[in-house]
Image (cartoon, rainbow, N blue to C red; front, side, top):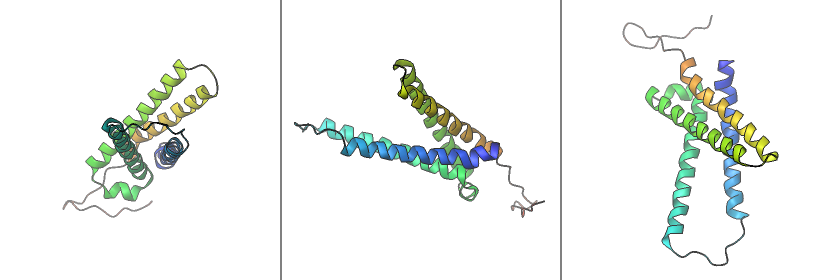
Length: 155
């Protein structure tokens, strides 16, 4: 179950979350009602730039984490400390998503949003578990006495 979770399920869930994030950002951008009096101050512009920067950073962490989890070739090409930091960041993002949905479910009235929040908590928990199992499930590289990687054989 461990390889299935961190190699197949977790990356697919992260990609689905990325698509949902992009869809929601597009919906809020283009389908929100217009403001009759636009704010001409710099604070609104700075807030928009800050929001965009955070969204791009979160999307980059999620995409990179999905790639590290789903592709053993990509995971092997990235240095172990970078891979570990990326998976830790993705795990923290997922835990933050789970906490936000738990708070939403606990403070809101029961209904469809509570069900969606429950599903989102389970999805985020699965991805966080995949991030925790990803580096632990990868066997250490075997090396020759000269420090070169050995040829992998299947048996």
